[in-house]
Amino acid sequence: MKFNSKFFFRLILFATVALIISYTMFQNFAFSNFETYPLDTSEVIEPKPKASVPDYTSLYADEIEILQEQIQNKAKRYRINGSVLVAYKDQILFEGDFGYKDPAKKTPMETGLSYQLASVSKQFTAAAVLKLHERKLIDIDHSVSNYLPGFKFENVTIKDLLKHRSGLWNYMYLTEQYWKKDIAPDNLEVVDLLNTYAPRLNFPAGRYFSYSNTGYVVLGAIVEQVSRLSLGEFIQEEFLLPLCLDETFVEKTELNEQSILKGYQSYRRSFIQLPAGFHNNAIGDKGIYASAKDLHVWFRDLKNGKILEQKNVDLMFGRDDDRKNKRYGMGFRLEHKNGEEVIFHNGLWDGFRNGLEYHPKDDLVVIVMTHTQNKQKHYFQNYLVKKAKDFIHSAEQRTEVKDNQKELIL
Image (tube, rainbow, N blue to C red):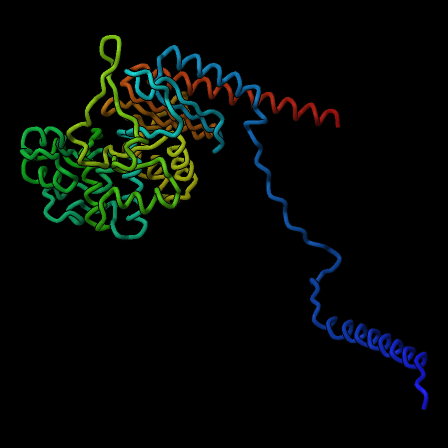
């Protein structure tokens, strides 16, 4: 029998076509049974678009250029040696470094250096205590003696410490009078000094406001006793590492000493470097080192409820129901200027003068860091806040006018 090649190839082609048609029909029939439809197919539900956040550095570029020039001129006039940061709605509008890293040798200031925050450190201590409060490891309404066994002033609560109404004696006076060792006392040793040498409170706990570094050292001791970590280790693990704050330190070491500025005092026509204060072994009232940018990141996430629950942020900002003390929240001072809420803290220690101001109405944050005991820092900071607020209002008005013009054209 002779092989018919044409017939064979036609048979193969026919079989292939039949197979394709059969497979297509099976697929349409089988998988149509698994398709699902909304109950009402007449309406297609589309996801809502996310609101876009304006780039304020571009939107307000004209005003920012003027603001930068004003800041630079004023910094030069006031002989500022330090760093400045201005943020609006969580966006940095201006950051700059001025003057000298070493004013005696005229070494120019560098970006990203860390400053001793002095009392601006208190917000970190307050946040550490409130973090333990969130975890129900402590209750801020309970007595300090519940967490520091043997603490002699049983009527003092943790909240009294946080809000500077404990009546405790100044631990620096006790240290200078009674401490005999070459190395200054740490937090728990300060508590021992209080228990041994402080005969009484300066006033009944909770009655008055009296700014107290001692209270924040005792708070540091509570964190250490409850967490079984040093205050520095707790802050490092809970806050600095998760936020990647690489320019923030809780102690000065050989590894970071080149990143931390030294403090200076003007002397005649030059400057002298100041030695570290004797009381630096106790922290909580001071002791944190940070760059301006790191401090901004920290505060941005704190105010936005990313570090603590919002109710505890409200406690720090003095927005709780207990408004006995309108001058201090927890870790922050409070003020009302022209009916506007201001949340801030300044610090002075070892030649450093620093400040952080938050104006919630405008969502404005101003940070000023200096390291040469410059008393003009206070006026420079006030000037900066005023110019930043003028800038915001001017830029907002200009943008509003442009938007209205667009609507009229349309």
